[in-house]
Amino acid sequence: MNILVTGAAGFIGSHLSERLVDLGHSVRGLDCFTDYYSVALKELNAEQVREKGVEFLRLDLAEDDLTAAVRGIDVVYHAAAQPGISATTPFDTYLKNNVTATYRLLEAVRTAPTFQGLINVSTSSVYGADASGDETTEPRPTSYYGVTKLAAEQLALAYTRDRGLPICSLRLFSVYGPRERPDKLYSKLIRCILEDEPFPLYRGSEHHRRSYTYVSDALDGLVAALRNFESSVGEIFNIGTDVTHTTGEAIETVQSVVGEQATIETAPPRPGDQLKTHADIEKARRLLGYDPTTPLREGIEEMVAWYEQHIRGREALQNDLSS
Image 1 (tube, rainbow, N blue to C red):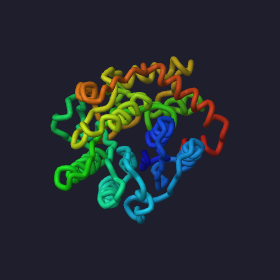
Image 2: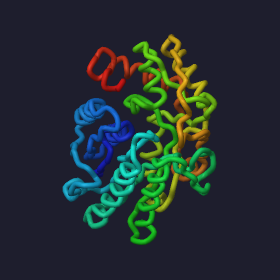
Image 3: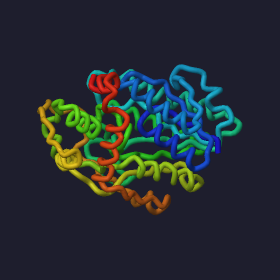
Image 4: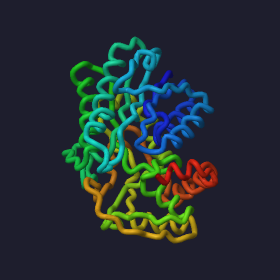
C-alpha cells in the first residue's frame, strides 16, 4: 500500500514509518518541524527515516497545499499534533495544529481518488485526570491538548458518520521509547542522570499511576488497526498496556538501569496533568488481536542504549535537548 504518515519526524510517527516500510509498504512522511521541542532531534529522526526509503515532505497541514502530499495515497496515519500541556503554549497553537490541521487533511483526502482510509492517532488525555475506563467512558479532558485532540478525533469520525469516509481512531496511553520528546519523563530523567543535571519532579506526581506503553507495543496496535481496517471503521480503540506503574516506581526503574541516582528537584504541580491512566484494552484485544508484551525495564534499557548511541557526546544536540 501507499501510506502517508503525518508527524513522521516525531517520536511515534518516525517509528511507525519505519515499521510500515519493514512490512513492505511504500511510505511518504510529512512533518512541519515545529519548534515546540528540539528541531535537531526531529532532523535526526527524519534522517534515519529517510535511510529506510521513506519519501519526506516538509509541509504544514494547517497552512500548506496538501494536494501533492495525498496524491496516490491509499491510507493515512494521522500522527501529527501539538503535544504536551505546557503552560507557555497558547490555546491557538493547539487549535491550529490539532483541529485545523486535521480538518484540512480530511478535506484533502476526501476527494483523493486512491484514498481508502485514515487511522487517527489520538490519546488517553481525552479522558481527563482519570483515564481508566473503556472507550464508552465520557471524555473529560483537563488540558488544551486533551480538549483539542478530542475535537480532532470527533471531527474525523464525523466525516465517517456524515460522509462515509473510512476512519478509525486509536487512543494511545503514555507511550515511551527511543526518540521520545525530551520534555517527557523517561527521556528527561535519563538525560539528567547521565549528564549530571537536576531532574525537576512535579510535586505529588510520584504517586501518579500510568500505563507506560513501549513504542513497539503501540505500533502493534496501529498496525493491527490497518490489518483489521474493515471492522475498525468508525470505531475508537484504547491502545496501551494494562500493566500500570507509579511515577515513583518508574524513576526507581530508570535509576536501576542507569546505575546512578537522580538529583531530584521538586517543582510546582503541573495544571492539567493526568492522575491515573490504566488502559482498558479488552476491545482492542477482541477485535484487533492486540497484545502488548514489553516489560517496563526492557523498554527503559532500550531508551538508555539509544541515548548512549545517538545523543551522548553530540554536544550541540545535548544542549538543544536541555534547553
